Image 1 (spheres, one colour):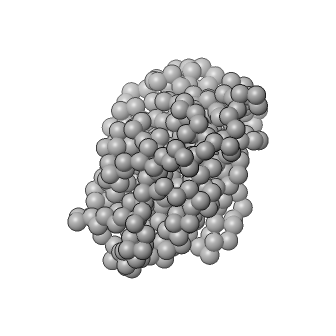
Image 2: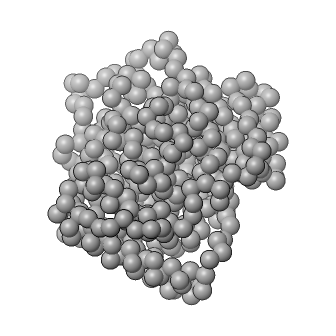
Length: 384
């Protein structure tokens, strides 16, 4: 099938939308079967134990944060995005911009920032690599103690890096930090929140990595956020395969795979203050129906890996998670049928087969590992 092209932001940016049916909000977990994993066994610190991160002399320790900005034909919003990075209250940043062959004014904007601010470096790709490969090359080049992606159309609050860096630097057991994020439109106007932007907890805290990973898999929902929201410790993932979980590489849910890998290696700091803004507009890859379909298919494989690694238990948990995955797959089938688009009608068979596989995982916690597209969608990780 010929794939419909979209603006080429990172593949991992698609996951917020892949948690919702095409043209509609994501189906909520089935009534009467709601797990509440955040209520028990998740908070690592108590009020007495929690470090006073506001008083930590962070500037004296001065760790370096690598901010990674993959670009491709992003001139429309790039200046605003780079300004939000340049004006951070935490100053020890190394900002790497890697362009993947833009034909608009992206390079001109990036060069202007690199010329004016020595913390900014522009890397011009010689060949068209694709969105995921662009991110991979940036991560390979990152030499800071901490890493944060920032997509070419998103915004970071002025204190966005500092507020997440303080608790991470104070507590080595934290592998990643995130916050509530806002949704904004093309003009920067705030949009209503969605199920995936609801706060995990009621106050800033350190949360069990295992418990948060289990919640994500149970609810079939990325509540940690898009790449522009998260700060993570460098060196914990293979920079050549950052969007893998288990032995599987993911495309539409690349960031979910990255978060699950990091959660297996430490805890999560969560801030209830919005520290980033995720921009939604019609040119995004995340609104491509093909990506939305692949995202639903990939959740079946995420479920399988979660079961195989013991994050989810067989029985009640596997059945609950499978029902949520199936609800999303059925919503995709309904959306494809209602679209009446011949390019996507053939994908109904893929979605239907995935329903059967998800049910098998839910009932007995096992299923044969299939060939693509069921495992990783129809798009390869690199070279799109």
